[in-house]
Amino acid sequence: MDRSQRGGAKETPRPPTSSRLTFKPGLGKKNRKVRGSIWSRMPKPAQMADACGRMLRRGAPAAIGLAIALALGGTAYAGYRFVTHSSRFAITAIEVHGNHHLSTDQVLAELPAHVGDNVFATNLDRTVRELRADPWVAKASAHRVLPHTIVIELTEHEPAAIADIGGLYLVDAAGHPFKKYALDDASDLPIITGLDRAAYVTDPDAAAGQIQAALAALASWRAPGDRPAIGEIHVDPHGALTLHTYDQSTQIQLGTPDGVAARMQTFDAVWGELTDTERQRALAIHLDSRPDHVTVAFKDP
Image (cartoon, rainbow, N blue to C red; front, side, top):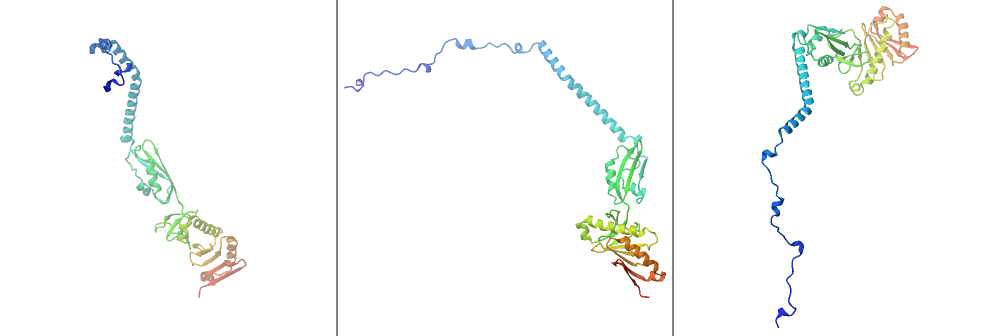
């Protein structure tokens, strides 16, 4: 028996309807768009003119503003060039006020501005910085007086004493050193000795307090006006003060700053009892041991 006849005749499967492809003549021609020439697609002249007009109307304010800004900027630059380069504003005078320790020539030599420079081109901030670099100057300012003048205002440090702090320095009334002592500085100032350099570097405010205490004691000493002139004030590690007279270098041991006024009155009583020869021979006067006890040490005759 033929195998092909066992199961009956088999039909060939038909493809599903969705997978069928159907071609209809003439369909592509209907979907195809007919395009004209490139000139037909260009905007009409009226449309182009209207678009350009809108662009001009929108950009006109910005263009006008830019033109005005450029004009103003050019005018300002031209004006700046004129005032900073014109000989009409050349400096003819530099006035210096407030200087006592610095001569006017010394101040002028430190300035970056000179006679003949343009008054507007002078950098006043730089001028002030240059002045403040001088150790004598505590404060400085500068301003213009148009059309030809620069005015300098100075506030200088006032030395109250010379302090030995690992070197000799001028100190002000607040006890702060501001300048290293030079031979051409004032020589009639008292010298404060005994200060420790390392202690000053560690705590400068404490050292300034010791200097202030020494200066206060010196002011009390000078108040009556008839006591011996003092050339040196020694401060020991405990803060006790010893005065050294200027002429004979007699040591006057006052002790701690507390109560020095009363000890100075005791000195006056003792000093008044000494003869001129005894005063010249006095080596040391101890006022710090007991309030009611004074020891006077004399040099060998």
